[in-house]
Image (cartoon, rainbow over all chains, first blue to last red; front, side, top):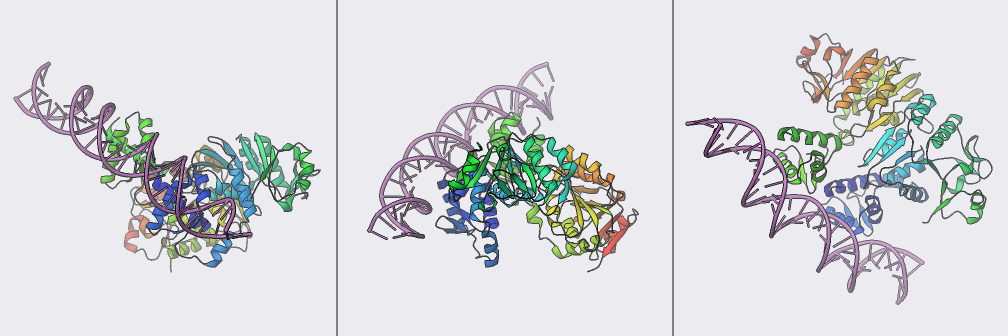
Length: 253
Length: 253
DNA sequence: CTGCTTTCTGCAGGAATTTACACGACTATG
DNA sequence: CATAGTCGTGTAAATTCCTGCAGAAAGCAG
């Protein structure tokens, strides 16, 4: 990656998130924190941003409304996303489901090597507009606006043509007995189909989804390759899933 | 390989990827890095690109990058968009091209009756997330990030399956002799294909696009069903198009 | 065809840039 | 005030850049 390119990317992230954390960026770019800090110092000297302890902020103290809205993406989801993004390896193909949790994965995808992202969500595709190295395959179909994902026969057909290595599945509920579920029948069918086409399926789980059930069944719990959960979830409530032989990845704060 | 040929190729790669890395290009061309660096130096002297450590970047930090383009002549585009949106009738199917001008159409689409919108741009699809009545069909394919549209064989195939009543075409240039054109070859092919599948094609024209030509030809002027232009454009400069028998819709302020 | 000139290309070596690591200093936070 | 995290500087290694030069190819005049 070219240095000047990296600097413009940092500015992009700064505009998008309203902040830049040296450590995070260093991870995303696969570079040392020193390099990032040097970049930040130089850009601060050019009056492109404001250097602060731990990272940098935009020069103009943005409207409080804006930063408030940007910051809402709860830390838990962001951490889950950052963790999942690290599971992507060079050259692999990853399928990103629609939803806010998977959107966080898209934001944290590594930027120092190439890989392919497949998604049936225009929102996710939009998140990747400024990603420097990701090749994006968009799955078309009839748009289900509630979740902003393509659905229908055309989507199923297009999905059948790809063989993702990893599928990051978003659900509204997960239950030891009732399995993974979501609110829309069509959407459930799509998710199930993607999982069947993918070598591995990982599901992102937050507290409020655990031990719940939504109307439409997607898959049984043991059909997934692993669950990604925040460390705030007690070991006790994970026990039923562990006994179902599902690998669980705990993301510490 | 001829030198000038090589330089053209380098510019192509630069436009396509938004970056050029000396080492990579040298490998691809089977030449020494010195030769490539010399080329880059010379082209930088000719103001064709921006030389940076490790390679080169497009001259102006992404001259017409999509997100950067958002914001040029917004009022005019909004009026054009509002006018075009009124051309949509109940029950019809409309294809929206990618781009900032067509995004304005999406924002102004009528909300009191149902119709179908087809688009190969995730950005446009995103604009329609909160539209109450529009059915949205998303065309999938390999995402061309510069313009944020799906491209490739998959996109062509999917487009072939729809028969839009109206296609709102976005271009970067229109010229009485050279016709409609845009910057990317693949994108031009897609636009041409959409136009061939559609009953009618209307092109949105603003002042800076008039009487200009971009590298890749899409269609001749007389292939379109009509041009939508702002009233600020003089009748004089429209004369060549009127004599080509192209209906012109003037949008007053 | 021959000899000369011009242009292009690759190589060598020194300069400049970039990056990562180490270490002591600094800052935030409890 | 203690600790963990972050900063900045110095340094060494790697990479990239530039200059000068020599050989090869192409163009041109005689």
